[in-house]
Length: 109
Image 1: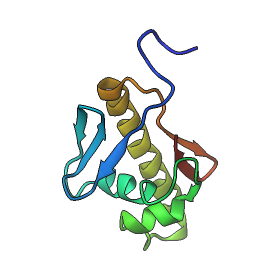
Image 2 (image 1 turned 180 degrees about the horizontal axis):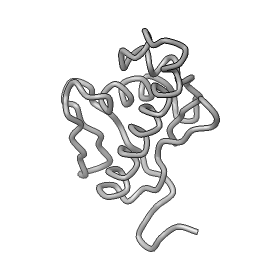
Image 3 (image 1 turned 180 degrees about the vertical axis):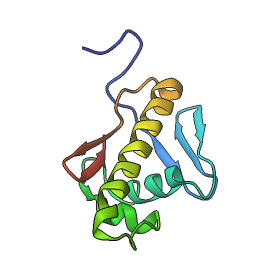
C-alpha cells in the first residue's frame, strides 16, 4: 500500500545536458559529474522496464576497474545511488521506488 500522496509511477524524463529529471512542471536537478548523473544517463538510455546489469552501470560510473574483492563495494555504491535518487524522486515527484533492482539488474518504471 502506498503512503498517502505517493504515486506508483509518473512520466519522468531525463535531460543529460541540463542534468535534470522532469515530470510536468516538477524538476529535480542532478549535480553534474556525480554517480547519480551517471546512473540516470544509463537507465534513461533504455525504455522503462528494461533490465540493465550492474556492470553496465558501473562502467558509466567509472567503477569498472575494480578488483574482484571490490566488486561487492561497487555493487553497494550503485545500490546507494539508486536509494538516494528514489528518496529525492519521492520528495519531488511523489513517486515511490521509481528505480528498482532485481539481483544485480536495475530498471526504471
